[in-house]
Amino acid sequence: MGLLLQNGTVVTAEKTFPADVLIEGETIKEVRAGIPAASHKTLDATGMLLLPGGIDAHTHLDMPFGGTTSSDDFETGTRAAAFGGTTTLVDFAIQARGTRMRDALDTWWKKAEGRACIDYGLHMIVTDLAGAGLEDMDDMVREGVSSFKLFMAYPNVLMVDDATIFKALRQTAKNGALICMHAENGSVIDVIVQQALAEGKTAPVYHALTRPTTAEAEAVHRAIAMAEIAGAPVYIVHLSSEDALNQVREARSRGVPAFAETCPQYLLLTIEELKRPGFEGAKYVFTPPLREKENLPKLWDGLKTDNLQVVSTDHCPFCFEDQKVLGKNDFTKIPNGGPGIENRLQLLFHHGVNEGKLSLNRFVEIVSTAPARIFGMYPKKGTIAAGSDADIVVWDPKTEHLISAKTHHMRVDYSMFEGFRVRGNARQVFSRGELIVDGGIFLGKPGRGAYLRRAVRGGAWK
Ligand code: URP
Ligand code: ZN
Ligand code: ZN
Image (cartoon, rainbow, N blue to C red; front, top):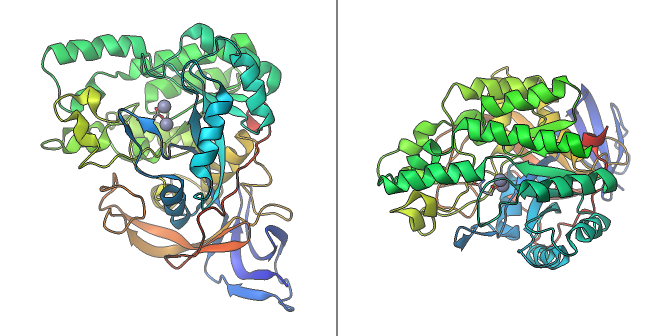
């Protein structure tokens, strides 16, 4: 006996069609109109969209950063993700300098074990390729860590030099993994930051004013150039500005395999948030920073024209009251990061689909199918088709929802999107055939989420 979702409208990256979906065990057995109910359990999805579960390819759960630790762990973060229709995420393990990547992988597996409520993969943040670093990258690939993040920013913390970046890119040209790049010129930014501090400019807004868009564009250009020389694709994370997007567009127009994601905050918020009275602007301190409003329509356009392929959240929450406050007298000490894991589909559906900026199919592609392909999870994840994991969101396109810290499930005391009213929300969420969210009630169990061994040479390599 299976579970039959009846009379819904299935949406994939390619098409939208009326159909029933039969789930048997953890997988999708059949997708077509008129599947006989036979002895199956049924769920009426009349008026609902049936979407492949959302995939958030960029989260930081339980991450030590900025002298503290991100406030959502694998239990609270994955539960919040599920409420918003995300059934898979890819988090970041961090190689501590001078240590082996396997140590970091073990540490992050332990963080997730017994806690993850949805399936998860891991990228590895590379901080050190001396010694056995390149062998470690191959070792990680064998463990299903098929992507690595390197930082061109945060000097003395996570930043690596160009030689390290180039060596890592060259290694992926051989082993088929994908380099994800935090692209900002950290050395230049550091000079501007030190000057601001010397001039007594310590308020949150200086976080944004010391990180020009040209410092992002320069790093994007350099990252793509190094990838071209190495003969590897590259994926720019959390792209925030028109200047940076122009670099990706230029490369793609030459056929270079450069890919990029942006995040809801860059599509919907501006630098004005950092100018809020008192210390409130600290809620919006993350990197790259929020930009001037002229950038926003350019990013939406980038999504439409496929110069941006993915929207992830960069979910990295720190509580305002006891964590952001670390930078009360010095913006450089504000832990960098913001919450958003729960709201990505709601925001993209409302501001993208409802406002006519994205088709339904492009929405599904951006929040699910493209990250599945690029990060080696497709077609197990990222679509609704026979044989795929039964990660399905029964999406009510008509229901209204008010985003607020009072009602959200993320373990953080504010919302970046407080007061945003959206139309469209997850009604039921299935993860590998299990109903884990039903009408605002969480039914999943911590620890049920499985580690995903991701394949190399995903969509970025085609
Ligand atoms: O401010 C941010 N984005 N914090 C998380 C770390 C990163 O750079 O992705
Ligand atoms: Zn980053
Ligand atoms: Zn991040």
